[in-house]
Amino acid sequence: MHGQRKLMDVQAGLMRGQLGEMKTSGALMLRQLAIYERPWVTASITPRGPLCFDESGGAYVMLLLTLKNFGHSVATHVRFDYGLLANSHTVIAKQQEIAERIKPDTPGEVVFPHDRNREPIYCRVSKEEIERYAINDGDAQYVTLSIVGVVAYRFATSSDPHFTKFAYRVGRIDSKNVLRPVKVGAELQPEEIHTSLREPGGSHAD
Image (cartoon, rainbow, N blue to C red; front, side):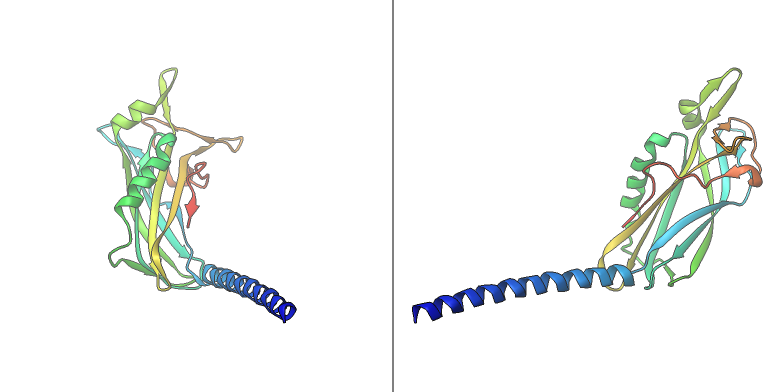
C-alpha cells in the first residue's frame, strides 16, 4: 500500500512537470505566432529637394518619408516625428524625446500589411547648432548632419505601443564612395544627397 502511494506521488509529480512544460511550450508558440502575425513598420527617406543653407545660417531639406508595413496585421494609431541634427552623439537622446512625445494613444494613420504610406517632410537645423558642432578645415567649415525620427503604432492584438526608430546620415559621396560631411554654406542637389548610411545605434524596432 505504501509502495503504491509512493508510485502515485511520483507519477503525479511527473504529470505536473509535463503540464508545466506544456504550458511553457504553449506560451512560447503563442508568442512566436504573435510575432509572425503582428505588423512591422519600417521607415526610409528619399531626398525631394536640395539641401540648402538659408539667410539665417540654418540648413534645411525636403524629404519623402516612406512607412512600409512588412508584417501580417494592420498597424493603427500610426504617428511619427523627426528632426535634423548636427551632432550624431545626440541621436539616441533625440529619439527618446520624440518617443515620449508621440505615444500612439490617439487615432492616427493606418498602414495595411505590405502597403506603404508616403509623407513629404521638411527638416531644418539651426545656425547655432551648426556652429556648435562644425569642424574647421582651412577657410571652410564642415558639419555631419543626421536625420532622426520615430514611428509609433499599435495593433489589435497588443495593448502595448510599438516603436520604430530610424537615423540616417546626410552627406555627399566622394570618388572613393565615402560619405563626407556637408560643407557649410554649400548647396547639395537631390541627386548629390546620400542618406542610406544608418547612424550606429540609431535603428531599432520593438
